[in-house]
Amino acid sequence: MTNEEMSELDQWLAENVMGWRFRKRIPHVFGAPPAYVIDIGTEEQDFVMYVEDWTPTRNIAQAFEVVEKMEKNGFCFELSDSPFQTWDAIFEFQLNKKEFAIGAIETPALAICLAAKKAWEAK
Image (cartoon, rainbow, N blue to C red; front, side, top):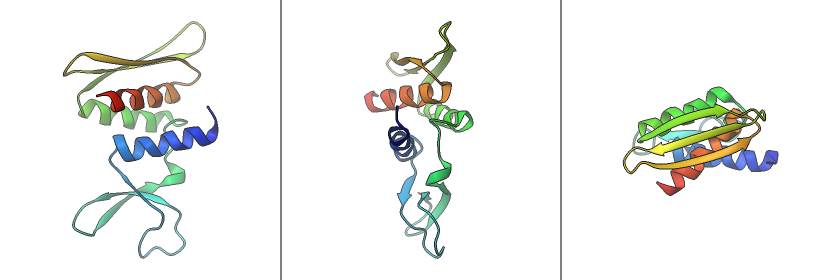
């Protein structure tokens, strides 16, 4: 997967799974880079993090934030390594027991993110 594809997946996860909204600029913060926000009121927004700092496809701690959000939305999760130094990730939707798996991925963070997208889109 290219860096651009991973960045697109990072943004997809932020907006769809995490529920954050992309903002090209933050009001009242001159020169700030693009960021993710959550709505907290009519026109108020709460800052979450800068886009450049959200990289769950490369950051295992952030990938597990995605796992936590998925679990809160009815998914079970399993991650395993293989003898070929690759990773498999499985999300199962508890409501209908459907499994969504991604296998043979080079890093655990990327395996989690790819499986999360596959499961979220199909639930």
